[in-house]
Image (cartoon, rainbow, N blue to C red; front, top):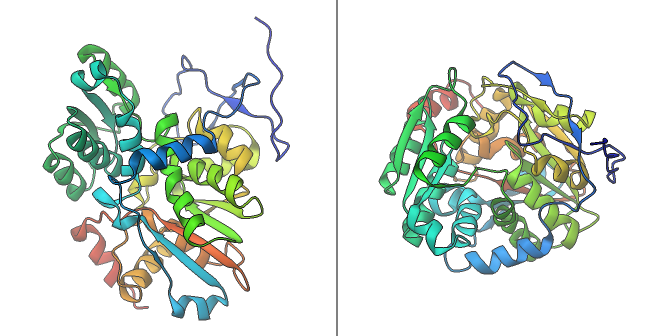
Length: 362
């Protein structure tokens, strides 16, 4: 079969994708030669996001939007925070999980689902499955925050742990799902999950129109992809910026080179952003719909968390502070602009985080 020409996105970069049979070896920071993407539309449309919003209405919270006058004065900007840390199960992940699970047929529901996650997607699938009456099994790393594993089990899911230094969660999950006849619900590379996550930005644009910029954390790119799709439909002039931790900046590298990069087990406190790479669905969406990608240090995450805990009185986890940290570090121009920040989650292991918050004075 001949090689198809790449699609050229609005950033004038060729879009590439990893085929499902391509095996990525667990090496640190690797640029992967990829096959060109066939000339098809993106996997998720704004209509999908709108349909997801209708599907999750009444089950997911419409989370509040907060402002900090202190931060606005400091930056000379109007900054609005979409507080997904106050979402059910403590993170935006409930949106995508509920949307995906609600679309299963009766046979799939009866057999149950399997998900893999370091915590927030695990809790979201566990809770969504409980609401919908679907059995669920969750694959979690043995170093996942204790609070996230306890919550996942508390929602009634069966948890199977693995050693991320030895096993691939994707391969383990595919094997167990096949053996048990379970439907696999991945944390970000799934069209219904992406559409569900995009409802957070949809709500933000409905509540606060005319945003000049939208800043979103990025792990595997589900929230960023869904948010960017909503932004392109509702505020085409809004600049969408994704944020990663410095130690796990695979999406930044991928975005700026147009070639998919991966990193294994990055050493960062942002456990929700320790994903190895963007997915086969999220990578093309990020390339086409996102305007910029930046990364921040763990120190900046701690500073942003401390500000949000102390001054805004909200509990935010490290990954949930990524977007705010980028803004506070000056990586996104702020003065004179209205900027949306998605606070992605608030599931904090206090035993691990409190020493970090108290180690440096503001």
